[in-house]
Length: 500
Ligand SMILES: *[C@@H]1O[C@H](CO)[C@@H](O)[C@H](O)[C@H]1NC(C)=O
Ligand SMILES: *[C@@H]1O[C@H](CO)[C@@H](O)[C@H](O)[C@H]1NC(C)=O
Ligand SMILES: *[C@@H]1O[C@H](CO)[C@@H](O)[C@H](O)[C@H]1NC(C)=O
Ligand SMILES: *[C@@H]1O[C@H](CO)[C@@H](O)[C@H](O)[C@H]1NC(C)=O
Ligand SMILES: *[C@@H]1O[C@H](CO)[C@@H](O)[C@H](O)[C@H]1NC(C)=O
Ligand SMILES: *[C@@H]1O[C@H](CO)[C@@H](O)[C@H](O)[C@H]1NC(C)=O
Image (cartoon, rainbow, N blue to C red):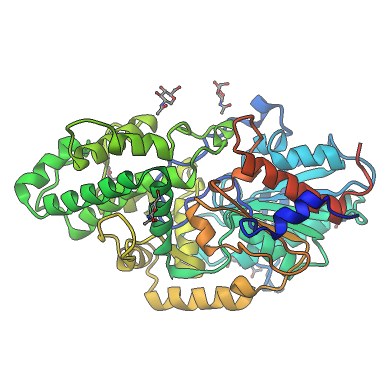
């Protein structure tokens, strides 16, 4: 098998490096269930196969404890041909949506290569509940290492039970599951033959200050004036918060649920500034992707939408424009007002009962950031446009307030994560790393070729995980080309036998 010359050229060209992503991401700060989360319909409405449950070990690292719990998974075998590969979509920090068994890039490849497809939901998310509650004691069983061992146990069992032992296994994942996809290939190479890793952060960092820097660069690409006006709005916001009279006026302007007054704590004000910055962060991260297919809201709001509001001709001040962006996002996500108090932010995350809301994963993901990854999207860089009011401490304090965890625990956890997985130095092959260069997460990704059989695709102009969604005519050519490149490597590594 040899590569068509055009692909070889593109892979050498400097703009083409490699990294890949998944279905839901609230890395850094959890923003509640209203934004960025897929509103998943029931599987039956898509004609997708129904859910099943696998008896999974609670603790893979304590052989003396044989307790099991039901882990949710789905299987799609209608494309499967004899000797075809086994495709596994790795679940992440939220409920899995079975619509991915009927649509998405990997399904197109499953049809071409005759693959059988599995989705395995991540422990502690969705309906995969290993413990009776979400207390700190229970959460000791939540870690990426346990999740990789779940995958290993599940895949070994299913390939044996279904007589697929000679089939090549390929994992797919985006964002945190993209990291898992790479780490799984690295730690369990005897179980998985190849991996696609999209928009995956590969290095744990406590202070992910570069996130806001990429947001700035991505806004600047749309319009340098946009960045200047976001900065001006943040200067005005900071000034207003220092003056009781102007602070009072912020309630109407920003549709706040409660007034800004001297009753508010410092944390409330930090949370307000962070939430308003979050409007821009999220739109940049998901700019023009095709998440709508799985029920995501407000996907037609793009960087250009926000920058038009921030810059169009009118006599409005920068602060008024910044407020208009906020109103647009509140209404697009059906929120009547912005509840900005720190307490209102913590309250849902402090709930230790299993409910629909806690199953969405905010508490669990925050726990993983506090013990394994950090990834805190702070305002600590000098080269970012938001008021510097959400420093590292704002996030580290959440670990203490929610779980009683100290910063020392966090620092040790991050060091351990990078020691265990290797950060950007991990040794791995048969993997494609896919990233988008306007996606802030590419700053923690592997975006350069990582050895002979570990190409990197850095997609110019693309957002988080955009390569994974079902293709559309309006996808930018760079995303279309990236999919061709990924398919080329899949074919090289697994696909010689079953093609139609
Ligand atoms: C296994 O661990 C769980 C969680 O700590 C505990 O509830 C259970 O009793 C343990 N089982 C055994 C057999 O030790
Ligand atoms: C797979 O797991 C199921 C449930 O624990 C078990 O009944 C079955 O024997 C396992 N199959 C193989 C081949 O290991
Ligand atoms: C913003 O974009 C302009 C080109 O439109 C470029 O000259 C400038 O360096 C960029 N600024 C930053 C901070 O990236
Ligand atoms: C979810 O189901 C409802 C009712 O069937 C439908 O109106 C809506 O479009 C569906 N959402 C998606 C994302 O398919
Ligand atoms: C997005 O789509 C909704 C529903 O179709 C529409 O009401 C809204 O005006 C659109 N927003 C933008 C910014 O295009
Ligand atoms: C704001 O959040 C608090 C705490 O979650 C809640 O009790 C309150 O009802 C919320 N207020 C509004 C107006 O949504």
